Image 1 (spheres, one colour):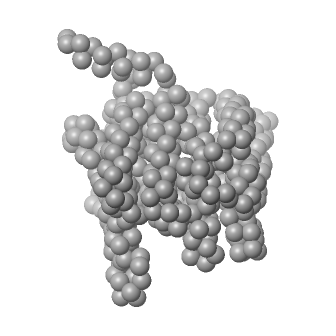
Image 2 (tube, helix red, strand yellow):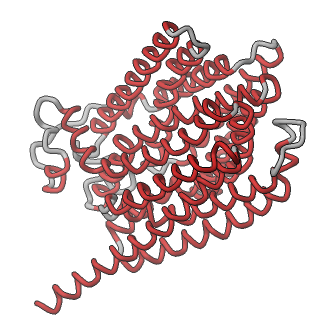
Image 3 (tube, rainbow, N blue to C red):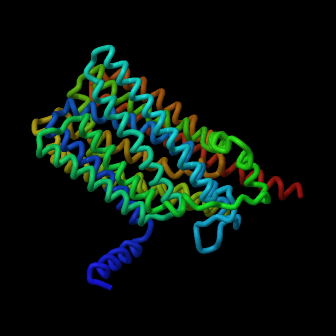
Length: 469
């Protein structure tokens, strides 16, 4: 073995020893750092107004990505983990014996994911045509998004697929590859003085395209494997996939996924719409500069995302495993620990953002910003409150009661939209920050109450059944 091969092997062993939680943080940290540096490059070269438009386009991509995750990746994760707990998966591997959560099923989810990419392509091409007819300046942005968004959606599918199988090291490798390509391309454009919002999205699409190609090559054997279709399957499999043995398999899987993920889809969509509405209101109806300032402040606060999203990526598979294999008390204990852990970490990180955020904002904008500390404080508090509610939210989804997680989102988004309408024009970015904080306070409080209520109802039903026996 050569010295280079030995070094690679030692690095791989070191990464494995870090453990899934730390690797998940590193993976999400890579994503957050990439987005942060991308926004700095755009703001420093193109201005705060361009940064606001980039943020709007990014939120549209996140909106479509959330829809895909709710209807494709989340149902696959739940089904795969349930079948593994039931013994439908070979011990010591992630290779299911049945087609239900098998590689054929994963391959079909890959195809369904491509449908979302096609939808995004048609949506942005139509938007580009409409803006061209209307003779507006948004045609180039729509065309750039028509390329970047399908590539991003496929990239998100690959990430979620690796997390579903708890293969965190490969997910981390792919994120590093994608980040390196994206930042390298943007720096090159900046050097050539060709950087713009449209070109930034083209680079995002190209980096995702190359990363997708690497992932598909590495998983070619997995997705290309032919799974024998046994006519004998478990009753749970028949219930969750009624049309897998008939024609229209993809449509049947999508219908089945809709039954599993419709409330998560609705919940994720309404939250993404709130963020898109806040950013779009500032950019299109208040002031482009205010939209850029809000985007910069939110980017600084989003440096906490390695904790929020990195650990939350593990909540669904971990809670699904506890729900399938452990008792409700153990699930509740895990939710409590996760809630306290999220709140404690975000408290420390939020304080750091408030103390040092003005220095970080200097990378985006070198002029003084009014009420900057106030804005950062409100956004940091909003992030802390949101993170504290994530464990209860994921737990409700895992125990099969996502409907109870949807109503708090509706209440929070409606109230947040009202606050935005009242304060958005007068207070600008500060009013937008308060709209998010008030929305998250309501969402986290109501979600926690509904989770504890659901657990208590289950315990009461179980004790009543024992008494009747």
